[in-house]
Image 1 (cartoon, rainbow, N blue to C red):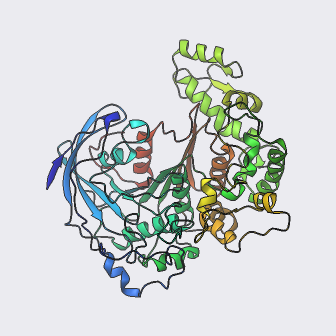
Image 2 (image 1 turned 90 degrees about the vertical axis):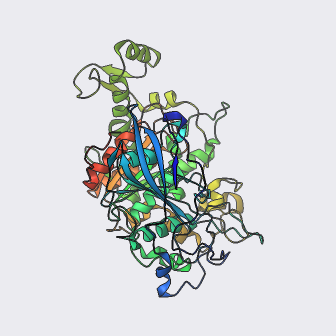
Length: 522
C-alpha cells in the first residue's frame, strides 16, 4: 500500500489512511489492570520474549515532502511499521505500543538504514499518557508548527521510533490509577528493550539509540539515559513482559527537563523574588524556607565546575551566569544586525555589551550582566511556591506519585509536614519511587556506569517552569563525569523552546559516527 502526503514546514501534519498492526507482538492480549500497573504482578515466563519478534515485512510505504530548517524541501519515501505492543503482557496496549519509520529513498536516492542511528522520540508532556496507536504515519509537525525533529531525522536517513507510554491520569473502572510512577519510565525502558531484542530484525543500529523529549518528556529522556540497565526497574519490567535484554541507550536529548522533583521546590532561590503573573509575590516564609534547604542539597550533590570548583549556594548564580546565561545572550546579540542589536541593548540597559573579542556570531562581542539584572529582565514567574509538591495536592507531580485509588500524594517532607504536622511521615514506597523517577539518583547517589555517554540539553532563559539550576546541575554533573555534553540556553525563550532542531539531527550523526552519503542537511 502506498500513500502520498505533503509536509511543508509549519503546515506539517501526520499522514492519512489507516494501517493495521504489523508486529508479532500480541495485539489481542487483554489489558492487565491494576496489578501490573502497580508493579505487583507475578511477571511472565522466560519465553515471553518470543512473542515480541518484529516483522520486517509488515509495513505501509508513504511519501512525504519534508522541509528542513534551511527551507529546502526533500522528498522522503519511508516504510511505516505499527507495533501493537512492545511488551508481552501489556497493561494497556493503547499506550504500550510504538511506531517505526524507516527511510528508503531521499530525493530519489536509495537509502540503506540498516546501520543508521535510531531516534526514540517520546511525545510525553506533563507526565500524561501518550499514545501512538492511532497514528498512521510519522509525527511530522513539531511544537510551534514547524517540522518535527522526527521528520528532520527521517530526512537525514535515520530510523525514527515513536513510543507511547502510560501516564499519571489513567484510571480504570474501579478507580485505580494505573499510570502513576514509575509506569512511564518502565514503559520507555520496555520500548528500548523491544528494539534491542529485535537487533537484526528492526531496521537501524540498536547500539545507537538516541532518545528525545520535552519538559516531562525531557526529564524522562534524561532518566532513560541515566538509568540504563539499572536493576531497580527489573520487577516492573518483568511484570509487563518486557524483553529480557538491555535497556541502555547511546545518547539522550532533553529539552527543558523537569527533573529532581523532590528537590525542585528547594530550587525556589532562582525565581523566589520574582512576582507571579498577576503581580503578587509568593509567600515569603515558604520561599525562604525552601531556599534555605537548597544549600544543603546542593552540597550533597558534590558538583564541581571548571573555574568555580565546588558549586555551592554562594557561587551557583555566578556559575549559571558565566557558563550558560551570558554566553546565551552573547550568541543572540552577536547574530543580530547592528541596528537591531543597538535597539535591543537600548531597551535592556542591564546588559553591558563589549564589541569584538569573542569568536562566532555576526559581529563578535560579549554580553555581561548581574544576576539581579537578569531576574528583573525575566519578570513574572509561572508557578507559585511550592511549585511541585503543592500543599493542596493539586499539581501534576502530586498525581504522578499517586497510588491505587489515591489520586495524589505528597512526596516531600516539607509539604507533607506543612499540611499534616511535624510528626508526619512519607508513605513507605515514596523514597524508592523518587529514585526510580530521578536521573540524578543514577548520576550521584548510585552512579550508573551503563548510562548514556552523549547528552544534548536545551532550555530557554525565560523558562520559569522550574529553576534554571535544575538543568544546570544535570549538565555540570555529566560534564564532571567526563561525558560528552552539549548544553545551551536559548536567550529570551520560554518553556519548550527548540531553536536548533537541525543542529540536533547533525549532532546525532556526529556522536554516532553515521554519515549517509548525500543526506540532506538540517
